[in-house]
Each structure stands twice: as structure tokens, then as C-alpha cells.
Length: 378
Image (cartoon, rainbow, N blue to C red; front, top):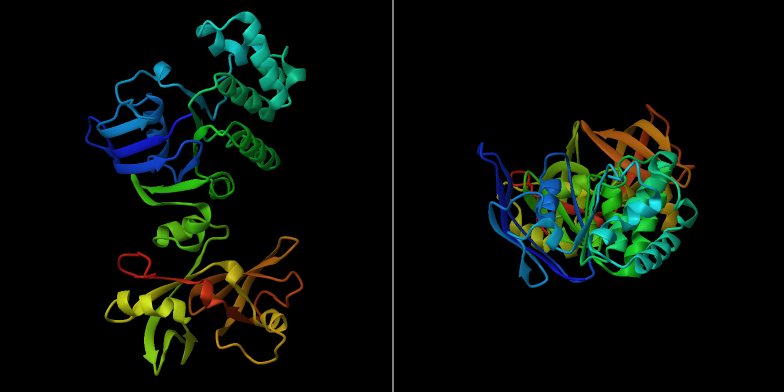
């Protein structure tokens, strides 16, 4: 096992296209790093550079204490699991798993012990004599993982390994990968565009956009305290609500001002956020309120939870556009002042398309952003 250090790494192609723009990441020995972002953000390029499949234009990649910029892939002590599985179709499962062991001239008896142990761990012992064509997608992915585990590398690299699987299998394989990491405790770098995979698998997440790491931290830190509006909107499903408005001081209370139709609604900002917003908000007071759907609910349910019949000061009237029952709760998509709001409510909440609905905001869980820079004000 080994730590991974990526220091000021840039990737520029001969045509001048700059794919990575000075990436800095440090992963401790045994940690699970997720590289997440949309298509073209540079995450797979960075993974290929760690693997040695792409050259580094500037900066350094260190596995343990060794700079591996000029080290060939076979000498980096890594194992890579690809999106396409990359199994040899003419070989059996056993032969696929022990292929790398044969290249390293591991004794045949030892190869058998390793393959049997790995197959038992991944519950594919009954498949060892089959060929890839006779396996399901999930079974092929287990074989690809088994081939990587058999090498006992210092570093695992996963390149969107679950994207070819159906929804049920993706959930199952996520659990398998997490369990594997808990058992082996091998340093792992995992590329995905799926923010659910990022939140459920990683010890650390690097959210990337246009070759730049927008935020690096734990899943909960990134979810609760996004550095900017891109991260806030990318991480979380459904994504965070964004509402433009202004802040102004009313006596001792900082208020978020919502202008709609012919009236104004003032939402009191909790003291924990108010001091930072006073310091960092633009001079004109314009801000963007970010709040996740689970922190917006129907006002009637909020009052019942608080055992009160009184209106909460953060209640706002909206028009319901659409409802999506999910079983344990219902997603309500509503309109407020030409802004689409998504809230997560009780499944029996009285929400009907075209009808008014009163929503309550939990502003203690909100995040405020500068509308110009889109950076967090907290």
C-alpha cells in the first residue's frame, strides 16, 4: 500500500488543448479517493496519468515516496479496473485472474492459492472454469476486480467500472467494492460521473470541472458546505435549489429578502451564518440562497413536527407543478417567482399539480453564494 500525491499536475496536448490545469491532491495510505465530474472535466485523463497511460506535461505524481512521471505502467505497482472489463475472451475466469501472476513468474501452486482465495472473496469460485462470454455483466466485473486484487498492488485504479451495469447491479457492485476496500485497505482512486457513487464510496471526493479541482474533502463536508454553486448543484440528488434575492439588516436580524409579485417576504437568517454573510456579501446585498430539497418541506408537516399551529417565519407560498412519489417520501416540484423549487415531503402531504402549497425552509442548513463569483459566502 502507498499514499498518492499529485502536485501541480497539468496536461497540455500538442494542439494547445489544456485538459488539466494545475491539480493538487494528497491521498493517505489506504484512503478511497473519488474523482467526480461531468464529461470532459479531466478525471479520466488524470487517472490515466496516474496509471502511466498518459504523460505528465508539468508537475509530479508520487506513489509513496517515488515520483513516477517517467516510470512505465508495469513498474508502478498498480492495478486498474476498466469500464469495459478488458477480459481475455479466450481465457477462463481462472486464467484471466492469474494472467498477471504468470507474467510476474509467480509459482503455479501459489497462483492457484491466490486465485482460489480471491474467487472465494468475490463469490465467483463456481465460475472459475467459464469464459467471459458465459458471464453476466456483474460477474464479468467481479472477474475484472479479482484480476486486480490478485496482483496485491499498492494502488487500485477504477475507471467508471459500473457504468455498463443496470441500476440494481450498480447498487450491488457498489457494496462489493466498498466491502473489498474495507477488507484490503488498499489505496484506491475511482473515477465516476455518478454523484451517488461518489457519496457512498469515497473517503475523499475531488469534484472536477474543466480541468480544475473545484473542491476536495469528505463526502459530508462537500455535501453540507459546498465551495461554490457548481459543487452544490452537482453533488446531491435532486440537486440543490438556488434562489436569487438580497440580504438586508432589520434591527438586529439579517434577513433574506424575497421579492415576488407585489409583495416581499423576509426570511430570517440564523446567527451562525449571518456574521459571515455580512462580511462577504456584495455591497448591493445581492446573494443566492442555496437549500437542499430535504430542507424544504410542506409547512403543515413542519408545524406538526414542531407541535405548533403557528406559521413559521420561513414559510413561502408556491404553486405545485409536479409530484414524484418515491415511496418513503414525495418530491414536489413547485414554482415561486419564476424559480423552480424542489422539496422532499411526507408521502401523504397535500400536494396537487396546479394547486397552491405553503413551504417551510430550514435556513440553518442553507448556503449563501455570491451571484457574480458563485463562491460560497460561508
